[in-house]
Image 1 (cartoon, rainbow over the protein chains, first blue to last red):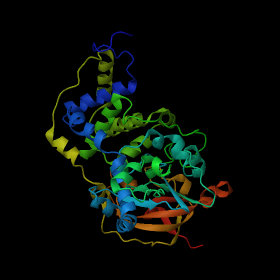
Image 2: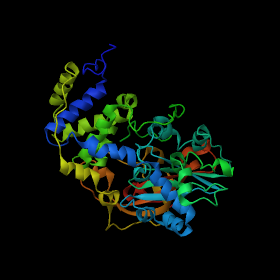
Image 3: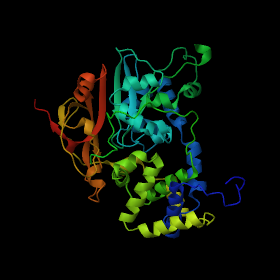
Image 4: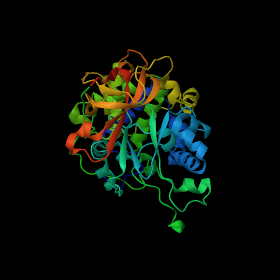
Length: 204
Length: 226
């Protein structure tokens, strides 16, 4: 089985899923329903361009501009359109010292992809989907976030095409950072609600 | 339907396993499935609710054993067969061919129109938001979810059926998944974000100070007179 990589005959152990996917692809190409240039022309760019950086820009703007933040919380879809993410259906929920928000999709894998890209595998896992609504504090502790009992936990189960983004708390010590510098602090996990945004090392 | 996909509140799935610096796709075929799905969606051949319902209809043991993109693949196959786009027989024959002759090249075909369609797909607002519905409930109103168990597609999770909640927000008209998944049209309905107290859902085992917010369509709700 070894030593034959690259000669076109190395797929002895190709999985059933891989064979089925290739079979479906070839049939659909023959039927004119899909084509062989889509990965190069569409999907590769999507893989590289669409990711949490978009959401981080939204968060940083909200931190830097209170008027924008107010618009974002009132109507997420319109506010993200201002930053070039038009057409997305977005609701933004704000973390405060007394409220912590967490996003899940118990029924499938709904996620604010326009702002965060494709979800990580753990977000789609049975463990996260089943547990986030019944024991969110235990879930958050697994992510290293131990909330005080006085903090209210709000879990958003994304059952519609409206997608939820968490606006994390702005960390202390970031008063002098530019919007671009703020955006670099914002992580995907903080915008799902399983982490807080950490201040840069110099500010801690 | 009361399928294995409806996981909110289930026990036994263990800790949440995370992968640092995870790639977007772990295997080449996952990218293939994702690409097919995007193309089929862009062409409007299978809508999002039909896709989801295709996954939900997997036999429960298969659903639980499958990976994420295996579930997408199963749904694509099922929906494309049901819509008469492909047959099970040709899919099986092509799979056997590729298994026995893995070097068989994929057919080459370029499609600039499809590429353009996928680069500028219809937005979420265009696809799912609809004017012209009239909301029966308003923010702050107490509601109770229907205790219903439809055998078809629904976005009313089991753990919030027959539960009392409060309308948190009125979101406007949205395409109704329960009909959209079944070739019965969009039939837009007012959609609401409803807030449930943790104790209403989980009883005394609820964690302290928990609230769950779920997006629910008007036909799932009744006014709470109690």
